[in-house]
Image 1 (spheres, rainbow, N blue to C red):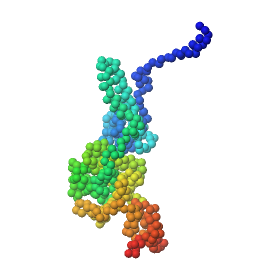
Image 2: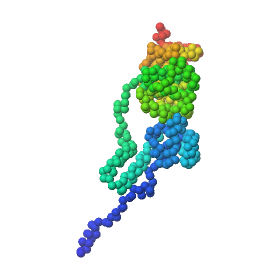
Image 3: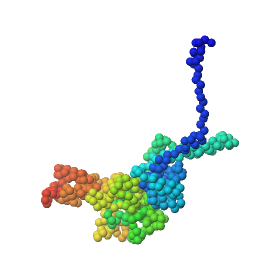
Image 4: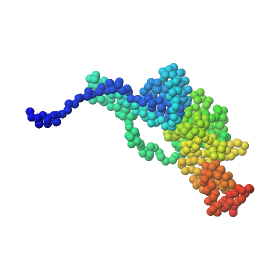
Length: 482
């Protein structure tokens, strides 16, 4: 054999390849452990303990079996039972529920429960973490399904097609549950396919269907009585009604219903603090399930925000979290009225607390009682927010247990300039400071009021006269000349 041939043979001879054995999936599971993300599980549980409103974000997405640890499954189960009873979820209530079932030690005691929310940040959205837990649970179920299929393939005498057919449905269900984020986005339906998109009213213009409506005002302004009267009219028309009341005693509610000639019944449910089970929150499992099952979609009244809020009304994140509970019901088709108090400061005449309250509602009315000696007589509703185009005031006359709307007094769709003109007409001789305060009270804006006066003086539409001291008084020219 020539040297040249040996050289060529050495250059072209294939290298020896070592064949790797196929890994046994059972060995892989035993070595690496089942898919799980304990940090995500702790984050979700701890966040709910800090803010029980977050439970409803994941109630429909997660089941106790989605958690990889038995102690996490038990804690999440007890959270669900508390929410179903309308009770608040926090470390104390969950610990008491676990103790009542002799399960506290099975979750490593109170110290572990407390550690879940130690140092946790306040968050408003735990959906991404819930998806991680759900995806890991889907992978675990996929492993179990694969092991079951492998066992059947090894020991069953059935035909391959028969064995595989028995697992197709389960694999498809797991595939849909664990669909990737890109597919979820791709499957978002068109707006017009999500249901009725036109604006429909239970009562026009006060109650757009599927909206969150605020009724704010001072104590005794008649806001709760008016909301109850609306509820009675709608129930008589076949609309289911639920009033969640943590504000008023039984005697006051009974007197109000008698005065309005109303009674509760199968279609009109009144849930107050006198009930043994207490009053559930808007995000309770019971309320959400009732809204889902109601047809037509109901009216839900929350009386009042302060009684249900459970936190600091001036805190934007806490207020937004509570209002999200009401938004969830509205997204399910319910019309939600939130009764709330107004503020005492000049800049808070519309409502009390964080500006996120106003930002979270669709329609907001400030209610004033114009009756004599505090008795209900004439009720004025001033609309200070509407996503549906209404602006102006509505007057109601209360006579003999009935509210009658003064249709001529309603002023829909007035521009800001028209409202400022009306404001100056009804308050002639106002100084700049006084007029700005009036504009703020009517939610028209301080800067707009100042510009309105200065532009009006320049154009001649407003006459400015010197008053007492150095204050300049303002009058509409047409009113003065006339």
